[in-house]
Amino acid sequence: MVRAIERAVGDDEDARLMLVGSAQGGATAAELAAAATSERFLIDHVVTAGAPSAQVPVVPETC
Image 1 (cartoon, helix red, strand yellow):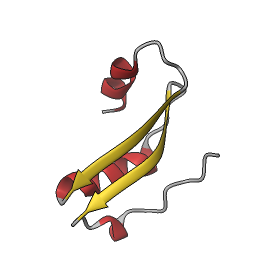
Image 2 (spheres, rainbow, N blue to C red):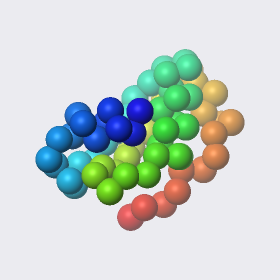
Image 3 (cartoon, rainbow, N blue to C red):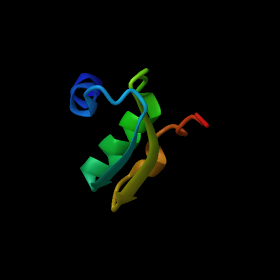
Image 4 (cartoon, rainbow, N blue to C red):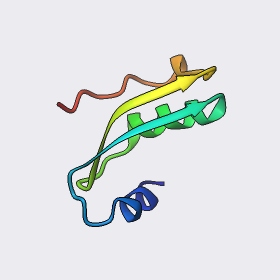
C-alpha cells in the first residue's frame, strides 16, 4: 500500500495525506497510519466512522 501511495503522490516529496474510511476501511486506514513510513509522504489525519480503531496502536507523533 505504501508503494501505491508513493506512486500516487508522484514527485511531491512533501505530500501530506488524510486517510478516511468506514467500518473495516477505517480500521485499515488507522493501521496504515500507525505503521506506514515513507520519505515521500506524511499521514497527518485519519478519519474513521464505525471502525474498530480503538484496537489500533497509537499513531506516532511526527510533527
